[in-house]
Length: 269
Length: 120
Picture 1 (cartoon, one colour):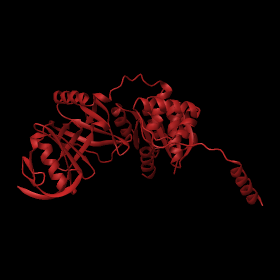
Picture 2: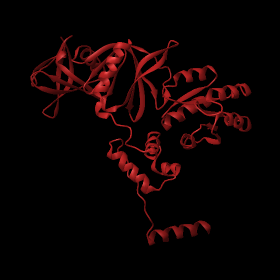
Picture 3: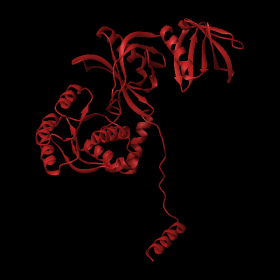
Picture 4: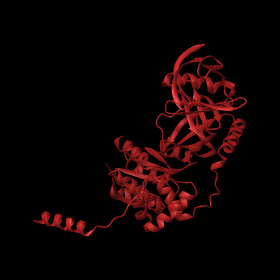
């Protein structure tokens, strides 16, 4: 068993330990003193340099492991290959589209797609990409041109650092259908009827998506601030958006008016 | 920064693109609501770049692209397409389009694509 120094969260504190890594398990020494078989890991997620794993035996325990990228890569590779998850061999392209523009030199990677409760992992010899389930905006069975032939693929739209990206998964159609159903099921909580927003609301949502601010939206759609606020409320209530900044409108006090009048005078003199 | 002609049959998309491109420092020299008008305006305005919708009345985006390319083989045209029209995009690229953006799009990526095409 190889040993690598990592930090593990224990009683809300980070402690340095030498983590033992074998092909089918990791071993955490004192004071945690735990051996974890990879097949008992039911979820794996990553936030910055912290790997979060959920282990389910009689009870469910979450471990947070902090280390350098190289160590985490080895850990992720081993865990993703053996953990308790929906896993299939496939070709994937991730990301293929960013913000509506094709990623230059995007190509198909041969590897596997691993679906755990918190996310979808694309794993190949050189890549370990995680799309958190909460960031999945849409899943669609569609066709894509692969080596000159229209081929069935799954398209997954997801948020990545504030940008909307799309990834594609390619495998035999029967497997694709199973994966599609599984992914649809995993992300069911995000489904909506599609009738919640009327035409003008949808236009506002589309403009927000495109990066327009409130002022631009009011001008483009020729709507007053009050109406836009009401639409924002609707979007927020449906959980389709979140407040980033609050815009303030002010009017000048007498002191302010005097200041501006004086400034104007000095400019004209 | 470039002089840009926007060809799209929906006012909403034209306005959106106009705002995005304007915010990136480009000049919008004209707008057209169908492919036929797009070709006429291209000949008249000679823009540095055209953003061209694909599904449009009168003359669709691919046909308009071909007409513009016949008139000016060096024309720089970026196709705007909806998801699921990848086949059309392939045809457009074959017909001489320099780039494409997929609706719905995000402003920074549109500006990046336009910048790349203008620099090409």
